Every structure is written in structure tokens, then in C-alpha cells.
Length: 446
Image 1 (tube, rainbow, N blue to C red):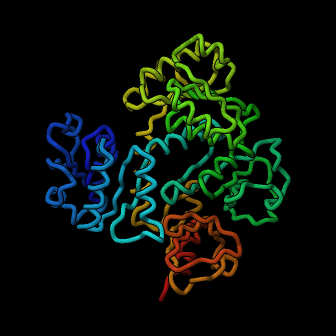
Image 2: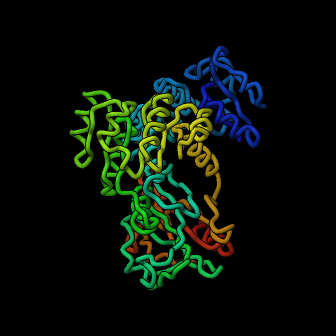
Image 3: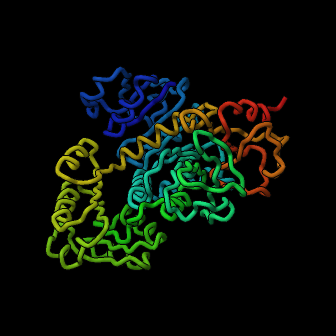
């Protein structure tokens, strides 16, 4: 695959390093932004600005497969992606740092606004970081995780522990979260697709598909360890802190936010209804002690400054907090944070790189993922006209299979039996590997 990257930034370097061994990489940027790290890679470098169509042509955009814009300027990324899409129809991935840009660009892909001039995938790293932090805080360790539909849907696998409330219950009586489907069970080395009457046993491995948010809630409800997180303190009330607190409110976890800026505190107080908002400096040990931050189950420092996050994290460690998570802007700083005792260091850039990897790996393939060492497959199948308006319950698969997700343009639907599929829908189907070909042939049009 031929990939063009616009931006000799840290993200651009991470992307080039990730993909250059298996793909043909070209990086576009000004020569002064080129670092020694790029010279160590077997890649091409084109000088210039990718908002210029001539520069794009110099990078052989017409014969490329993916264009990724990841400069520090949102506007430049957007214009470059739109230009690349206009002249070549290439798949475009655009990095942005502001929520409004992500919302606007995604709006262009909806049914009312869809045209030839759009960006395929907009990545807002802070949103991805929030999702990762939420999973770390609230979700027990999954055996397997796969992301679909640009991260809007996922597959998660969990093992049923002794004493779980679902042991001995039939699937239909478990009360699993809305917008989730149990698509597979591995029991005694046998993988099968369950139905509503299937009884859950201890040590079963359960495979779920659903929307990312619903699966997060499912995991927190059914698959936590005995000592659940009941209280969380967040230092930093920016986008990540705010979005994380909002998610934690939904989980009914007692949450505090410490934010230095008074006006931002006023905004947080208006938007968050169950979170205690504290106006103060997270590096103030006296404040942390007075607000009993040391009593929190988890403390997360998510300011925009690595040095401040490190100091805040060390201070709350001193107060006795057992689990401390810190945001790290510079990926190279992660080992330092871990070395000095921070439990978990996470970077929005790392989250974004993983998202790009998933997106590129899914391009032009029918098999999105394999599960249980290849025993099962997740297939992506486009609906043809012959299946338009057919109900899920009326599909007659020639082998055991289940439709876990329907991707309809920019929307994700977790189907029920009476859900109608439409032409051009993308079906994400779970089936056993040894019969997957039969399922694919069922949807082929002669």
C-alpha cells in the first residue's frame, strides 16, 4: 500500500515508523521540519505544503492509497485532505485538535450533506484518549479487543469468573446492556454461536459486539473484579477531563475535578451535574490533602503539560493513592513516567496511532478480525440490492453466523431480529472460520 503523510511532526514520525516496513511511505513537509528520525527510515520526502495540488502530485497522490494529514494546524490538515480527495478520490485521514472541526467534518458524511467533497476519517486524539482512560478506569481486562466502524463499535471478549451474577442464567435473562450482542462463546475448547436460551457457565469466554460506549458500560457492570472503582479524582478540566467526568457520571462513580482556571470551573459546574468541581492548583499539596484526594480509588492527571502531570501524579502518590494515571503529550516521556512510579502513562498520540493502524489494516479486506487464534472471523460485507429491506430474522445463512453490527453511512446500528437492512449497508458478521466462505458466498450476487 502507498501512504502519503502530510506533517513531519511527532505523529508523522510515529506513523512513518509504524508503517514503512510493510508499505511505501512518502512524507510531505517543509525541509526545516525534517528531523534526523525521518532519515533513519526507508521513506520518500517531498518538500512543500500539501495544500498545494502541485505538491500533492509530486508526492504521486494519484497512485496512492491513503493520505494522512497530521500537522499541528487543523486548517491545513483539513484543506490538504479535501484537496487530495478532490484530485484523486484517495482515502483521507485527518487529525484535528478541536471538537468543532471533528463535528463539522463528520457532518459532511451524513446523508443530508454527503457529496464528493468530504474527509473519510477525522481523528480527534483527545476523544480517543478519553475512551482509553475510561476503559482503564472502569473496565476489567478483556481477553480480546477489536475496533470497527472508525472506533464507534467494538468486539470484546471476557471470561466468566466464579460467583458472577450471570452464571447459570440464560443469555436472554442476563440483562446485558442495550446496543450489545453476545456473538460467541468458547467453552471447553469449543467455540459456538449462542442463542437466547444458551446458559452461561463459569469459565465461559463470552464474545460481545456492540457500540463502544455500551460495551464500556457492559464491562463495568458484569466483568469488574470484586473491588470496583467507586471514586475518581481528575486533575485538569480541559476537554479530556470534562469528557471523562461525563462518562464517569453515567457509571455513577463519585468524581472530583480540580481545575486552575475559574471561568473553566464555571463551565464545568454548569455541564456536569454529579461531579464536584474544585477551583485550585493540582500541584498544591495542601489543597490535595484538604480535598481528601488521597482517599480516591484512582487519580488521573490530564493537564496539557507533561511536567505538571508528572508533579501532580507524584504528589497524589505521596498521599497514598494506589492507582495513578497520567496523560503524557510526548510519547518519549512515557518510560520516564513509569520509571518514577506512575502506574499508567497514556498518550493521545499513541491512541491515535492505534486508530490509524486499525483503519489501514481494515482497508480492502473482507476479514476485519480473527478471534480465538483464528477459530472465528469477523467479516465485512456490503449489502446488495437483492437484500434491500430484508429483516435480519429472514436471512438464511448456510452456516452459523450472526450480524453483530450494521454500518449505515456514518451511523452504527446494533440490530435486532426485526431490523431491516438496506442496500449499501455494511454488515459486520461474526462466524466460525471453517464456514466463513459459505457466509460470504451467500451474499454474492451472480
